[in-house]
Image (cartoon, rainbow, N blue to C red; front, top):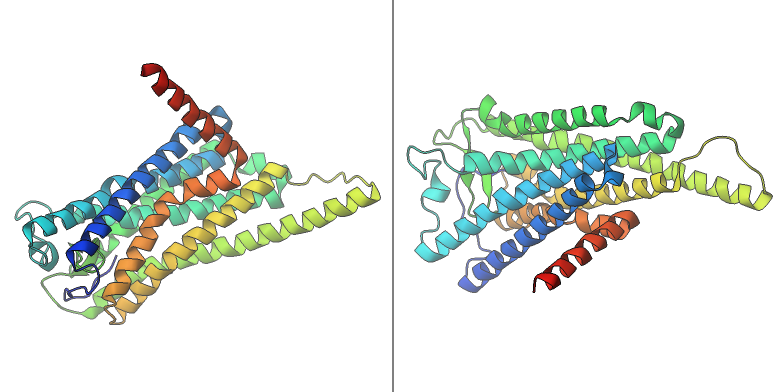
Length: 337
């Protein structure tokens, strides 16, 4: 999401074979992202059992990831193929924001989509963690606090707030624009033609500040929930050994499994987001880190296809429903033949 004032020739992926390999990687990522998140949406929105607040939040997360696969990565593929065909790397795409002349530069759309969807993902994981923590810590109040209406409102607010934050650098500073970056192979924030106050870059610290605040809160809440789950497991084992019954309602097995799944999601997203946060902070204080920016941005982008894997491994009901859909689709294709 960030670039230095001067475009730097990137030393990575410069030879033709590596460029082709990079494009192949992007295309595979598009296919995996579209397939995985489409499957998630079909299951969570098309199966009545998953019409729950948690299901709606996971569907919102899938939409954000799907947008990355539809808009962000395909644009990078188009850009890289254009550079290889025309051998025109480093010209209008990387040096200014007027590639289309009088037409709006495509990065003005692609950049906020990527930033906004990343912020939506972080916000949604935070909301999922809150939802699971209530189910674990206050099981008697779960249905009263967590409703589909409230969840839908929170999802709408998270999308509006995330995309407002994504465009805020251009709103609050005239020196920041969006350009296609030769290092990251993505649309990044950059200084415009007026190479003035470097203080403009400090606006971009809004991103890591917002992200790490939510991620930090998410990690703390997950630790609290998992600690409660561990205590519950010890108490249940003790009661089983002593043949005692407890009248206090405890979290259900499905709630415990869901909490562990959300913990895995949090860990995966934190691991994929940390490199880009480090890069943003480092770039603001003057480090270019060209090669590092490529790996940081694309590690974050690959997170868009991780969720379907996590759900398939951690959620038995999701896995069973996915198998039903895929087997039914295979049988339909066989009948058509």
